[in-house]
Length: 168
Image (tube, rainbow, N blue to C red):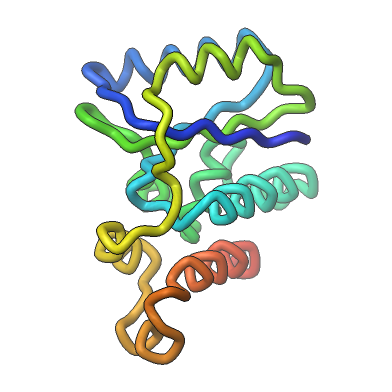
């Protein structure tokens, strides 16, 4: 399986319509497309690790959800509960977004269609303004941060993603 990330910003006026557009692109090209709120991501490595672990879980029939996109969200959130994982999804209004595209092959046409939905920007990396959202979502404590340092928050997130597979 191949994975491709497309990141940027976009304004979503109708979330249901937007998700239907993504679903149409995904089914039209035989791929999986998951939109993630990039204001809660700690870098490309975070998203790629989540996608890899989700694909592996599905391949080994060890998945929580029957939908690979939801499985990616579960791993990306480091949480087994779908309701909590959905907090990493996009919503109406201005979004920093990353599309996780997964498939045996990812056609250029699919990439172009998805790229047309966003204004390209590097929004996936960890930044200080993401600290509150990330520490709350992943349950990262001030004690942990004091022990390892602020710059290690992305590694703490990766740890949560890795541990998600063990909590099953």
